Image 1 (tube, rainbow, N blue to C red):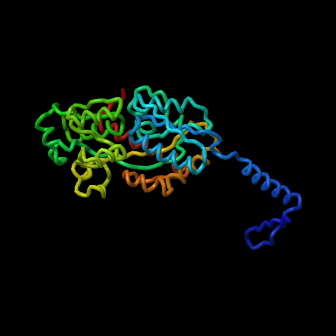
Image 2: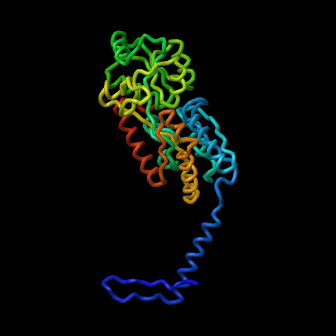
Image 3: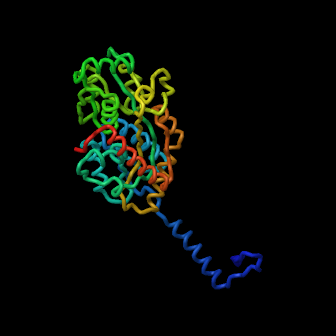
Amino acid sequence: MIQMPVCRPKGGKKPMRLSRRACWSIAAASLLGRHVRAQEPAFPREQVRIVAPFAAGGSSDLIARLLARQMQVVTGKPFVVENLPGGNGVVGTLAVLNAAADGHSFLLGTTTTLSANPYLLKQPPYDAARDFALACPIGISAGCLMVPASSPYRSYEDLVADLRRHPGKRDSGWFNASSRIPAALFKRLGQLDFEEVSYKIFGNAISDLRTGLIHFVFLDMVAADQYLASGEFRVLAVSMPQRAKRWPDVPAMNEVMPGFETGGYWGVAVRSGTPRPLLLQINRLVADAVRSEAVAPRLRDMLVEPAAMDLETAAAYATAEREKWGRIIQLAGIEPE
């Protein structure tokens, strides 16, 4: 039985009852809305591809696989991680851009691909703001200044002193925006002179760091975690706003170099044009996975703070990050290539 809605005007006037025809119209609309929601197809319908636009073993790959396992457990559908490195993340990003906008191709988006590339590339082959929607951030983290355990640099001050004694004679390695930009900022703010060596794959940079062919790298916390845990490498500073609880004796970069602070994020992005109802489903799925007991503690173990957000907050966050990294890249003096 449908109870007749009552309209209650302001000012203490008597309430007005709607006509029976109006009531039936409202009821029908309500039932139709419920029917449409009930008929909304479950997501995913089939296998989901998660493109990690950097090499296996890096932070994008590790986070993508952690998330994929949880979403597969929850949905019962396969989530397959595909590593497509190259072009500072461009190769993998374009693979998702060229896929159907049906929500079944995820980009494991990063600060590099979604925030920095618009300022690092003269003619970027995609527009991060126009071509992609951030369905949900996964986590926020920062990086660290890392050297081999066999290095003579026991502290940040040791490294800086050596760089000043030997201008142009020491090397830093980089392979994406999160390793390139901090190094350039370090050089610019500290008025230092060292060579910046570009690598296509971060594993090659780590190998050269291990053998002493290069002297230091800035590496995001997720990728650095496994190397620091092995004891082969040592952290001299962190690029977080404050010291990391794991290394209370290691300074934050802005303590020793005021104005230095970089931090980035990982998130699931999909092609623009993906229907909003589908976007909402993806947002809920990813957010639930990020908050789960299987994922959130593991992210924190890697010094990543889980950062699930609703769609509107995620969109505003993506815009703010692009603007922030534009300012940082300008401060670092990096010209687009």
